[in-house]
Image (cartoon, rainbow, N blue to C red; front, side, top):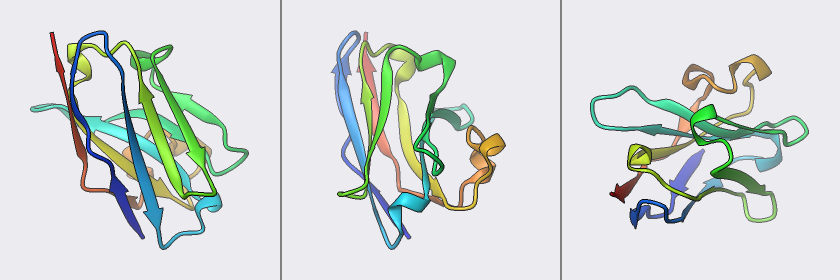
Length: 125
């Protein structure tokens, strides 16, 4: 399984940015796909997920109403659309996946088996 994130970038506070992750070596429809992020000196935290069952989506409270996750099964791609970015959103964003994760684990990094190399998002104030 290989997960490759697109380049993040630098954006001003209030701006928008989209990051994508292309998965290979998987039957994409059978995998939960998630985004986590890690800021310097902080633990990796859950951002958003598309479940493998029914394609349900969940986002962290800290980004609700601003971030949207979507999955394109024809392109093996999951995209995180980030709007109204804040300086506290700056982090390295990681795409993660699992075929066997339980619904109760979707927000927990311990439930994921695969992750990408990460992409850096910088938000200037």
